[in-house]
Length: 92
Length: 299
Length: 218
Image (cartoon, rainbow over all chains, first blue to last red; front, top):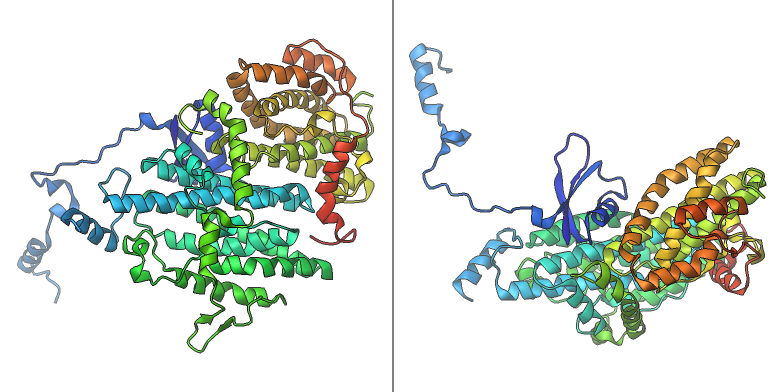
């Protein structure tokens, strides 16, 4: 079986994908993960997962441009300028 | 070139990264597999010249450091073959082809080791030459390989220090110890000059065009000479090439290596090539039953 | 002689020599283990063993007014105290290698447990440290045992190595080992002055070191 390893470099950091290897079962996989991703004390934690448990998703349709959900969906510059001019607070 | 291939070429040349499930031109995939497989083969074969010296290491610290270095190399082979597998070639097929002499491994691992001087010189200078190539591969367009190279480069950082420290202990020891290093250097200089390959211009190198490699061979060699000739000479060691010098344009001149010799070596005709492949074939035959019992799909 | 009564230096050298030679025997698999992942794992075990040897030699060296490397390399072959079990060259036989691994780890666990209770605080301390690493060696041995126990060649290997395993321990600890392994106690292959095969091993192990005068730096 192929197992994937995610490692955490320091407490507080996200878990990041490290790599993969072959192992007969979870017990072997845990042993090998220690060796490959922590024998130099370079990780504080590991997640060891069978590859088949990972579902990859790579397509994200955006047909109707719903960018109101993002910061770039807003352009307040022009209105802000007008509001300041009206209130007499526009900078020189 | 077909439009889709051209589009892909433009994409990688402008810095685009490729992941395992992306479409890629056949030529790109083939070149990638061959290149990465050769790298994996080299890490595995690189173990053989060095492993004899674990027993013979003259202190406990050297024994541990050497074992750890070799362990790293085995680990790198594992990481690198995994990349090849996800491109479509199983690890067992890589090992089959290596043992059958159908695939190649780097020239430096076709030579015998004769003394503890070799151990120092290999860990210091051969690893240095390799790291230059590996650092350039950090920019490989094929992302899984680039990511593996990051881990590889990080782990290799102690190898050179261990090598240099080993050499330093000898060159500051007895005259006989100094001589061990000089004698080893005399034998390893030519393989080192061969290491980065023929001086094919970068813009004619398909590997650079596809952005698999990001550095031309001669560029890598010059980088090696720039970094390491001064380090070697400052120890009082002599480099066995009377023509070696840096010219007025900052370019290293040297006796042109025999490129036919390099070809002969990497196609299995080096002094230790057959012996090492035979050893690997025998070891694998002896332990094949284990893989079959516990690890059905990979050897 | 029981472990508690044994002179400290002897006890340390028994252990250190076992770990040094076993560490070397296990490191003979580097690069040629059955598959790559296991190669890396087994190499760590070998390194840990050599690391244990180094620490144990360090303690003995302090007593004797010398250093760890001198004890590891500069004695004559006849002065080494390692058990016959660790001297056996088992490469490229993985079944016998794992059989030895399982048996040695079990035997070592028995003696380390005792050593943790030793009245000598330094000995007890180093035993505790060793045991914390050995937990992982035992897990590793166990996982291989489970995979190979039904293989005839493995069973044959355990049968062959059992008398040697008993010889790792002092006589009063052997019944404990027998109980843990689940086999009846038999005549052990005891520690004795190492023979020709060990002398050849020592020769190769020290050839580089002996090529320079004693005290040379490497």
